[in-house]
Image (cartoon, rainbow, N blue to C red; front, top):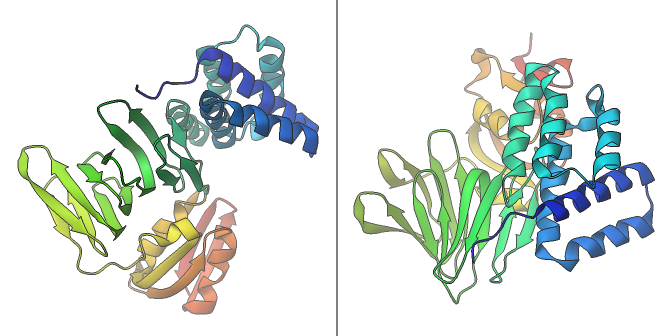
Length: 318
């Protein structure tokens, strides 16, 4: 049967656990109790993922009035269903700046997804059939698992699949439907295309209006867009390294590198046009994007111009 959204009871319980953990600090016993509740049922983990990512994406503690709203949630959790909770939390964000509004809309997407990650987060999720789903930063998927098919719908961001060999697994993106049996592959949905990289097995590409299958073989990376599907002969970044917490570049233009790093942090990150042709090759850790940026002046003839934590521009040395 199709993967269901968690019911109102599970969501209410997840909200209560979040509030209790937030107030308890480092209560190991309470953390263990929450872990046991999450593992007791699949619906509990789904509800937990939606509530915790809504909390993280909105950063409720930093929004004026959040404490009162969270207290209201706690006091009213017996009579709040999911839409009411979302409306209350979303309403707080909307009284702030446009940036908060954008983050709220992003959080709504996470709330309505079966699995999601926040900015800078990477997570792994075992699926009911034994496959392994990994999500990169700011990503969201829905599941459709029934007697006829097993499908993961990529709503935004980037995933990696390690498929169970017994049945075909489908991944639907904006640009194509992908099919694999025992494959291991990654798919990233950008604004203008989907990029697919296969490290083991092969992946079939199903495209609307095209009756002929195309196959992505092991070791290949393809670009899928409105014009068609074609193999990329050269790639400037290892498309699978993010699962190990790394960015591995090969002669990558600086603006493209900053665009990738920017996916793991909030705020503006860019460079001046006069250094746009500078290139990087190397291995960079993703765990601390700010520390990663500090390596740039040691690698290239550039300096960091930082107005705030959220606004960083890379410029040429004076």
